[in-house]
Amino acid sequence: QKEVEQNSGPLSVPEGAIASLNCTYSDRGSQSFFWYRQYSGKSPELIMSIYSNGDKEDGRFTAQLNKASQYVSLLIRDSQPSDSATYLCAVRPQGGKLIFGQGTELSVKP
Amino acid sequence: DTEVTQTPKHLVMGMTNKKSLKCEQHMGHRAMYWYKQKAKKPPELMFVYSYEKLSINESVPSRFSPECPNSSLLNLHLHALQPEDSALYLCASSQRQVGNQPQHFGDGTRLSIL
Image (cartoon, rainbow over all chains, first blue to last red; front, side, top):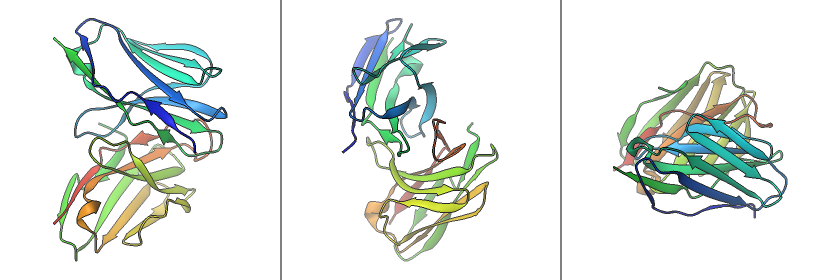
């Protein structure tokens, strides 16, 4: 069974620090990788997509993909209290359905 | 604000009622999805429509009935629901069902079954 695993947290970081969120996946054929942010009571919001090995940066967010090790991570620099949310890692195997991890709850303390 | 619009935002219904959830997107996406999400759990796929045809039904009970009238609209008809069906129902769309394009979610409908 294809799986995506994340630490459920909560991950607590001080304001201004770097938050590091990790995700591993089981299907080596996976082609596309996404990070969604979900505030409590709201819907998931796409914040990053990554498709090839390496780093992809967008503002304070950096997604990192290592297909050989089957992990994808999200770094949030200069974390703000407004970044406090649940972060969902989602992986799509080739031709398959999007598979979500259980989500990591991030808490940024002022 | 999202480009996928869902109505209503909240719905309370009895177990004998019939209601419908609606979803609309104008991004030209040809794949649309219904998900169910319980508290502190990830979204759980229910149905996928590709080019207005039902592509995937994840063994969803027949009290949930999807409909895709055209490429921009997706409905979910509800009948005789159970209390355990109370959840956040999410609609999403993507350019195509197959491929690398991300799915974009609407704001969801929070459904409560009395």
